[in-house]
Image 1: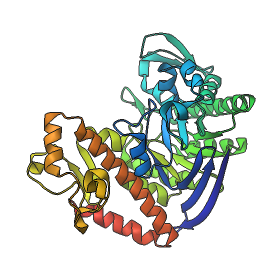
Image 2 (image 1 turned 60 degrees about the vertical axis):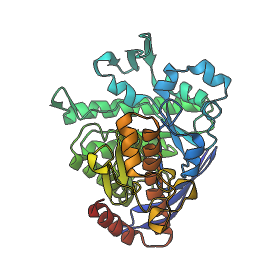
Image 3 (image 1 turned 180 degrees about the vertical axis):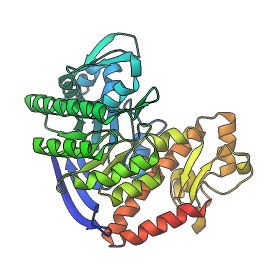
Image 4 (image 1 turned 90 degrees about the horizontal axis):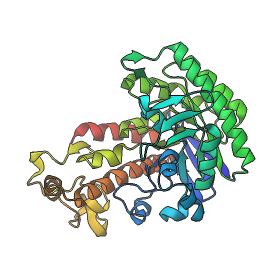
Length: 391
């Protein structure tokens, strides 16, 4: 089940959207960022902490969960929600991106993808039908079609329009196969189609139009953040999302920085995911209202301030929830986090992960609040001014 309600539109051309998505495991207010929990967990974060920081929906990955723990275990729990003890909505990726990332270890044909398991070397075969079967066992609220993630380049060779077309057209055929199998399985959740087409707007438009004819409950834009120059990612983000049906949710896959999220919302995106806030946190890279910082740098060794003086996350404000700028003193200092990083203590990346995810989720909440108050344009201007100010 999926119901999408478009509540309001904003921005000079009315492309930014405030919406509400109702799924089998709950309601999701959009625009929204979805933390990535590839193996059935968002690394370093307790489910309770995700709830407290405002996470409404998280991701799991079909490919990795198929490898480990396997479908027998998943089926015995009735799906991924019970297995990982998360009772809000879950979206599962189809495995297409992970197959793409295997490079020469996999062989893609019209029928599907043959590859060796990166876990134990077993020879495996993933088809659109098998992807649907796996995701039905996982019981994810949003199921993604299996697609071929068109690379920007391979061994220095930039993908040509002809190559991108062949890939896009196969993904369309796979989309129809996914849709047929999804219906055969009587899966009660929602299946999204994925727009492909490489870096070529005309191919993106063809993909979009044919997917819309298939009448999916929602649509994603895939094949960005695959090594292309930033200007190409921005160009495709400006081109594709707002052309998708207005009455259905739009998902930009694998994007991105805080600036990318705001830009995507301005151009009609409702849903985002990216490993950046969690992966960067594990490498001492922190996002804040006033720019980014590397807590590993020596200049933080004696700094008694929190990561972000305006932040209410546990890392910055502690259990009190009162930000430093308002007199709160219950969080953790940059000096302490610098110390944890230098010592290799696991608490360090746990705290920076909590902060980064809180920052991303709060950024989306602030955009929703700005839309509700009809001041989205002013919010965007202030966001860029704050980020440019620096720490």
